[in-house]
Image: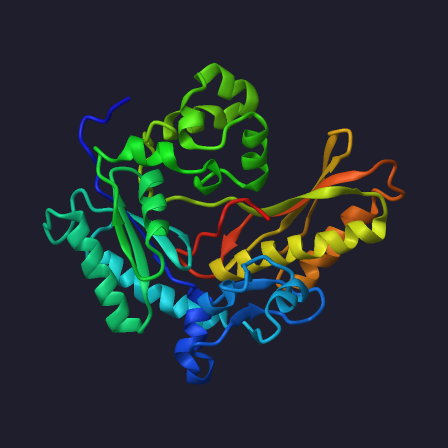
Length: 359
């Protein structure tokens, strides 16, 4: 499984992107706890400044909870046209070094610089130059991870945030993974991390101790991915032509939901998150799918396709709630709700949306 030739992969990630743009453009907000998103009762935080994060405010958190954690929190309405413009500046900088760019969202991307346009041998030097150019041209900071595969580059970029760079060499890779909690692994969401912990898997070393057959039995198609990343191995190429086909979010509840009213309330932040990712990526979809997992683990989905893409969050919310209401009356408790939007089309070139995300 060892590659014949080591790749040189960067993961570049803007620091608190939406909130940092707002602080850049409004000096009064600098140094203050800022949340981009709606302050209404059912609003959701799209992004939080580092000042707000010190109080425990996080993206996807209900606004009412964020306000409880940080009473002085300042809410700012998102300006996706501005964020997209800054994202295009970033992409132009990336393109000076390589054509192999895989955007994950407006504020982060993988770059393969094994063969780069400037003939620079050191991937770390390229990362430093890119970070310096981003700062000079946008007055914003970015963190970068440098490694020999995508999984480790992503871990590396998160290791020295904000405004940092970290390199994971081939010699360091396996040992670095062994020490990390599995909840920090890209591709392991909260629900999967909880399941791993129940199975006695808390760190990369714990994950590495299990054979491939066991991980496939427990995690299905994701089993081989977990098996190899526990060894610091990830052969996925950086794909500049990747096309996202859906965007979704879901939430597993700590207590089962038994009423339609409670289910409607629980669905609101899920819809909000799906729409936020569509907005940030400049994508629109025509098919909405509701996912429901009951207390007895029976799972059902309901879908509806419109003739034209949904243009507003209200449209998406209405259709999703109608799918939910078609299940009334609830015969048993609900342990998980999810919503996704598919049949995607871009209204901004080269703006692929995020794949499914766990709340």
